[in-house]
Amino acid sequence: MAREQTPRRFGGTAETSTGRESLWHRRSTWLVVIGSLGALTRLTFRPFVQTHDLQDFGLCGVLPNLLGTMCMAVLLSFHWRARSAAVGATLAAVVYEFDQRGHSLRTFDPWDIVASVIGGGLAFALLTKIERHRSSRATA
Image 1 (tube, one colour):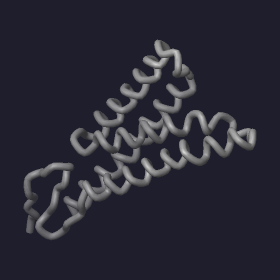
Image 2 (cartoon, rainbow, N blue to C red):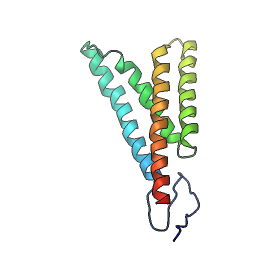
Image 3 (spheres, rainbow, N blue to C red):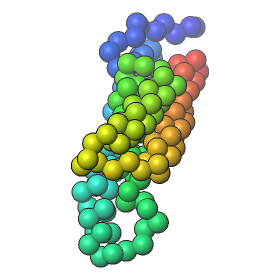
Image 4 (cartoon, rainbow, N blue to C red):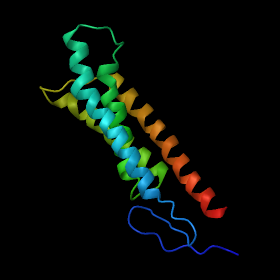
């Protein structure tokens, strides 16, 4: 017997008559996890490394960009597909980084651009896996 799907609602939730696997719930969980890691990195890890003069190979400088791009992509995925969300978030982060060149209180760092591109790629992989998992459960 074929399953009937209800129309897509806000947040990309597609519920079947037999299963209630919520794409919105998965995305919101990843949004909270990645956002919390980004905030912790910026608020605790970076000051700790700078205060104790530790060698972290530049991670405290690029992790906020990497996690911020991932968080933005997950947030955009509530309305866009995985590829569009990842590309949009990556472009926004790169444009923001180039915009910092015009401000005297900001610093332009090419490693932030690299971190943003890597974060966009990781977000695309994560979102694609979430979407494929949902579609495979819907057809099973």
